[in-house]
Amino acid sequence: MNAAACYFVDGMESEASAIARGLRRRDPDLLDRLIEQYQHRLLRYLIYLTSNRDLAEDIFQETWIRVLERGHQYDPKYEFSTWLFSIGRHLTVDHLRKKNPASLDGLLNEEEGVSLDPPDNRPSALELIAQQEQAERINSAMVGIAAEYREAIVLRFQEGLALEEIAVVTGAPLGTIKSRLYRGLNALLPRLKGARA
Amino acid sequence: MKRDSHQEARELITFGSQGLADSEHARLSTHLDGCAPCREYAQAAEQLVRSLRSVPFAADLALVQKTQLRVRLRAQQLRQGQERQWLVWMACILVGLSAGITTPLLWRGFEWLGEWARVSSPVWQVGFMVFWISPALAASLIFLARGIHLTDTNRTSRG
Image 1 (cartoon, rainbow over the protein chains, first blue to last red):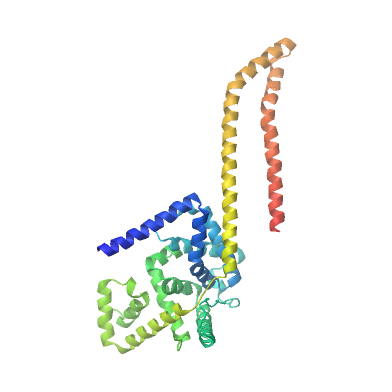
Image 2 (image 1 turned 135 degrees about the horizontal axis):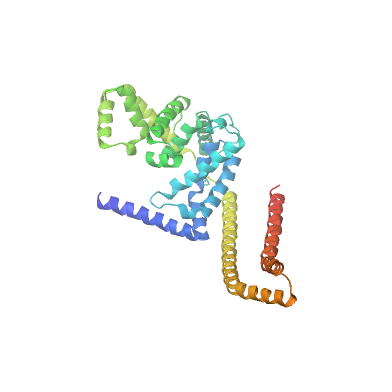
């Protein structure tokens, strides 16, 4: 490992260790900062996982309560986001099991409620319309594929998690994650033909 | 690429450049150099990933503030619970110590009372047991009543 990579890994570890120490102390200021830092990523993941914004917002709040309560269980050898997503996922699966003892696939047809808000960086009206159209096209294509494929795609390509980290979050073997990504992308490609960034 | 080389190339494209080993990178590059359909697939996948990353997203400020407030309140509850638990443990230790010291003295006192009142041993022994256990019974009843009250309150606030 070269010096720059060492520095990066050490920096990541020290940040994760600082988070772990703060979580053990149940430091409210640290939690406020973490909520602000990870709000968009966690909520986006939960919305794609559940296909339901209201449900995702409820689970979003419960996830942070769980982070507070189980903070001492966070292992700083993993990135905080990996642990956060796995808590959100567990809560989602628990909720779905209580509501309907089927797997995540049970949510496939619940297309209503999926809406993503535009960011507050004030684009022009035309840009806004184009962005919204694009987002709607992507969202409807995403909702049309199986939930486990959608989850793998969101974690890999939107959240930028490594394959191994996705395996930790989902609790699935690496081979399964690779297969989900491949199948998910192949299911998504024909649906999004013509979509441009 | 021995098995279906196109499928393997497409799988490697899917995993993204960061997820590939150097040897896989090299194999993929060689395959793409000589395979137009897989090159097209790679371009389409890249385009798709860019489209996915371009989706704008923002959480509501109200949701964030509500979550922060809930987390702070829960943290306060947990802290109070911990303090209460500490007090309960201290009380248990003190009660245990005082019981250990006073029980033999109390036993002798009841024995003397039994002799003075000329009652049989089982009678003063039962009297001792009732006297000895009554504070614990009273405390249990208070805790039980408090527990039922808390359960009812929680149910009402949820319902």
